[in-house]
Image 1 (cartoon, rainbow over the protein chains, first blue to last red):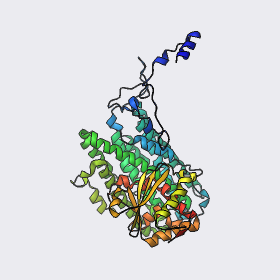
Image 2 (image 1 turned 30 degrees about the vertical axis):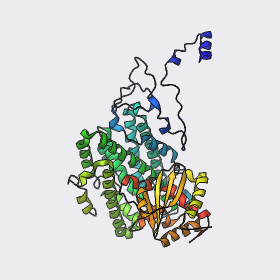
Image 3 (image 1 turned 60 degrees about the vertical axis):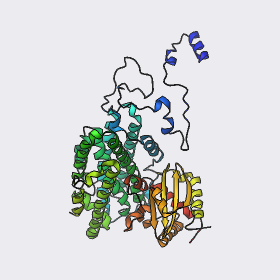
Image 4 (image 1 turned 180 degrees about the vertical axis):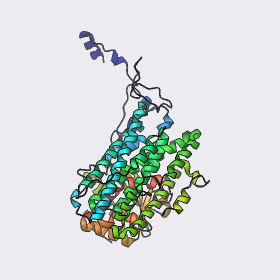
Length: 356
Length: 143
């Protein structure tokens, strides 16, 4: 430092910035998995404020610039609005488990399929491209609304946007790779946008997107191996399911944080869950729901052709049941399981009517 | 040559998994979970930490509670799965872990705690688990 200051004097440099520094003498050390975000949560830099007044885009822990103009329209400035305990962990996991739709899918295993099955595959690929577009769009909007002081949660959302863009492209590729093409848009995004993108609050959005929406799509991706006709389709669904499970984990952990730290918002969150449950089977955004385009194409794929529609539909019914069961267990894991015992949730009734 | 199931067999597969960089990319990578494996009445526990499977050990039924989830099949079904992997170099058709889970009435993955967040780790790390068992194609297995 002395030498540098000396040089500064010699060349008439203004080295005032050298005195404006955050906590110094920090020695974050890599762990077994490299230098992760968790490893740099040291000293002052680990402190996340309960309320953020940072409107200037200042990195957390950096020295504020007096008189700086607000540059971000950050409406999410309360920690509990967006926080979850394992954000750093999920972010690192997202980075380290990326895959390429160009090179990690064995596209050469795809062979011509009967017309009805190919049409059903293409309809589902069209639908999933549509849905994933919104699943990327929505979190990206919330990134720009969130204070940089909560960068861990923001980073997970940005990684999710990357995941969703890969899902968009892999299903588009599937539609265009085997003699078919894109089919009719389902309009599912209208429901999705209406139900999720108009959320006034991050937790409202997350309950709809991460818990119910992505939870339902996760079940579909997992079940994708049952309607895959080659190793390429199996890989697509398996890899997408991994990403989706991470997004669902974000929602569960955020809800768990809310349940423990924001009891005053419990009733509000229960009402978000009421709304989400009401649309679970009727909302066009659920591919296993009651929209004809998707439920018919799923049944044809699951059955093995139009002739075997009934067999496919039976499998679809079991998917719907599984979606509801897994949703119930996730909500319970998030700390809101009472609703299934005290009569508030209509999920039991929905399970009984799931075949309709 | 290693006999399935045994700690020695899991150690041999761990060794392959831990040393092969190809098993830590392409949608695999860091993996943090504790997996139970039930082969008939025999129980094992695999610990995945970051990029390695750090331990394989025999456990008691009560210790299944510590597992995020466990994979359970009759010994003959495990054998059929491993023979498919041996034959093709990796699991094909109905022998991938996820397809086995979906296709069997009793499923493949289960837990003693019923916590879906932890059960979801089977989906979240599915490709890693598949690579792990696919690694058994490179060892000679006896039953």
